[in-house]
Each structure stands twice: as C-alpha cells, then as structure tokens.
Image 1: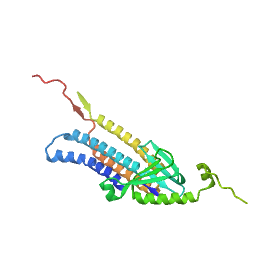
Image 2: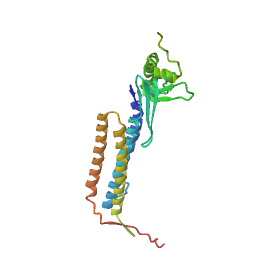
Image 3: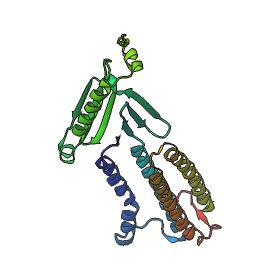
Image 4: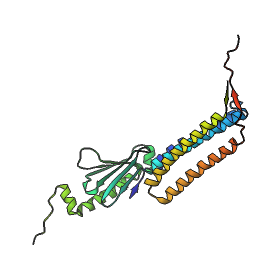
Length: 177
Length: 80
C-alpha cells in the first residue's frame, strides 16, 4: 500500500500559484486599459519581456519544485514493515522504517470541515517507545488505512519469525522431541 | 549618465543560468527518488517543454530589440 497526501492538499498550493501566475496579466491590463504608463517605448518593452520572462521561469520552477515535494512524500505499508519517506525541501530527505510487529497503537484523526467532507486526515503509529514514531499526514481515508494496518499487524504477530521474536526479547520456543 | 540596456540582457542571462541550475536539482531529485517511471517521465517532459516554450517566446521578442541603445539619466538637480 503506497500512501500520499490527499490531492486537495496540493490543490491549495496550486490555487496560490495560479494567482501568482495572473499577476503579470493584471499589470498588463492596468497598463493597457487603466492608462497607467510604465515601461513604454522599445527599451521599456525589452525590460518588460525580461522581467516577465524571468518571473514566469522562476514561477514555473517553484511550482514544479512544490509538485516534487508533494510527490516524494510517501508512506509505504508492506506485509513486514512501514516505511516513512519525507522530502523536506530539495536537499533534506529522511527515510524511516518500522517493523509491523513493533506497532502497538494506531490512531486516526480527521479534523476540520474540508477534511471531513473529503475524507482525509492523519494516522498516528505508536510503538512501545515513549515518543510517537510515525505520523501519516493528510492521507485519504485514514480510518480504512488504520483498519488495514491493524489487520496486517495482527497477522504479522501470528507469523513472527524466530529472529523477530528474539529481537523482541521473547524466548524462542525450542523444538521438543 | 547613460546605461547601455545590454546590461539588462546580461542580468537576464544570469537569471536563466540560475534557473537552469535549479531545474537540474529538481529534475535530479524526481528522477532519483520518484516511484513511477511513467509519471516521472511525463512530469519532467512537461516541465522541460514549458520552460523551453517560455525561453523561445522571450528570445523571439528579445531578438527584435536594438541592444546598442542606452538609457539616459539626468542626475544634475534642477535649478530652482
């Protein structure tokens, strides 16, 4: 199971970027129809092209970087472990792994009007440690995800390997004749 | 005092160089850490295509400019 943040989270950034993309258009309309005169003449036109081109190039780069940041935040749940991959900016990436049999508590929460309507929220995963280990942030259908992980945890605990039991500090049952 | 407008072209070329450097970093990240090869290819292709489009449009307008011109500034204060 591969999980990412809900598409609405990215949509919020998308709307902001669309607004910023319209800024040169608004300024052009002001210049043409409202009689505001700036950067006129051939030199002014050249400067306008340079400024608008630079503006859109960097706008496009930042929008793509935001998409990459959203896309590379992912949580992977397998039948053995949970993997947390977080991309925080371009040069900061963390990958954490947690074996299923170590999970002791899973909590899902959905807070707010839009998350409730759109069915997205957080899933908190707790081990025996005092500090909370993983948080799946703003994922779709957190209650279903919680149920699925719980089923996997129960299944995994029933099929623990000897190595896993040894790492838990439990005695590995000996074969008796 | 007069400033040749070609200076603004040099500043613009410098901005393009910074943009290309930033693009390389972003594309490196998505190619290295992206999960779905197909989506990585499509999104990267779209990014490069739009970037090239912006640059080509800008080049089309900027080639029509006479870069030998200057901007004149009058720094002497007016006599009251």
